[in-house]
Length: 118
Image 1: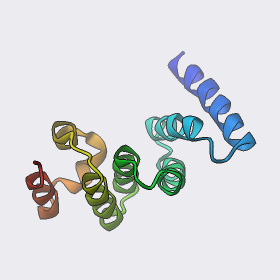
Image 2 (image 1 turned 90 degrees about the vertical axis):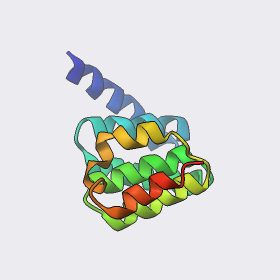
Image 3 (image 1 turned 90 degrees about the horizontal axis):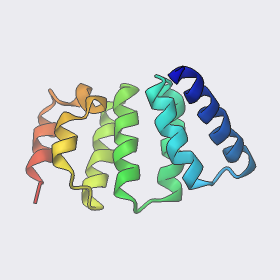
């Protein structure tokens, strides 16, 4: 049943975005749905669009980092994560546990980012 619900939600948000490609309040849940469904490339496309629409939003950049990491784009993920922190992202407890960032954890840059914690 959950898959059907997700499909209905996905269709709903895709419809809203077709009508207004810059509708942030539809793009954000759509990106999350794509990621939950394993459609990482589609999620990344939406997160990249969101980062252009909300360039100063730390959560948008954090989500972009997650999408890059899930797509195997490590360099881009670190850049987006650094940007998120510069913009004020500070939920380091979540960052440490977020499974979307699993591919980054073995890299020394990940530990270095955690040291930026204020």
